[in-house]
Length: 187
Image (cartoon, rainbow, N blue to C red):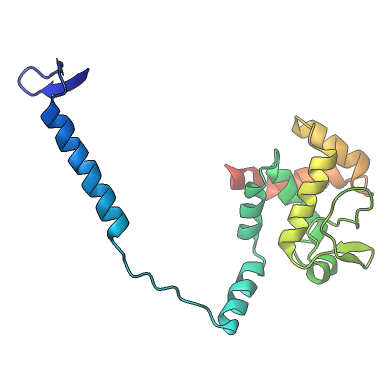
């Protein structure tokens, strides 16, 4: 059954599909397919020079907090503001030697018992080729040890017991979250 809108009554009315309607529809579909397959727009593929490729790679690997937030969002962490606060704390707001030399945003040690992306150890911490690898490695850590965490309280308790040596670590994370309004960066 086919319905057609009647402009006088402002209602949809039942109508039968006629052979003419089917023929018209078939011709339209057929012409669309033929034109779609036979049209040949010239597509120019531009290749980048070696120098341009290096510039693109350098810009991609260049760190910014906005790129970090985007990466954290891509990885779909439950409490992204806590992870961002950890990056602030662990890197001294992105100025520590561990971050600058090792591309290590979270003060991670080289993992021995789980999958990881670390290239080795430098200055007692894992080092990575890029800061993005550090975030992905944290995601691997998260999926190995934190996937069953359901609340912020559980997350903070896990960090207090297992992550940092500093007994005030969680308290400082909470202060960073509040002072920097980190929750608002992920809404």
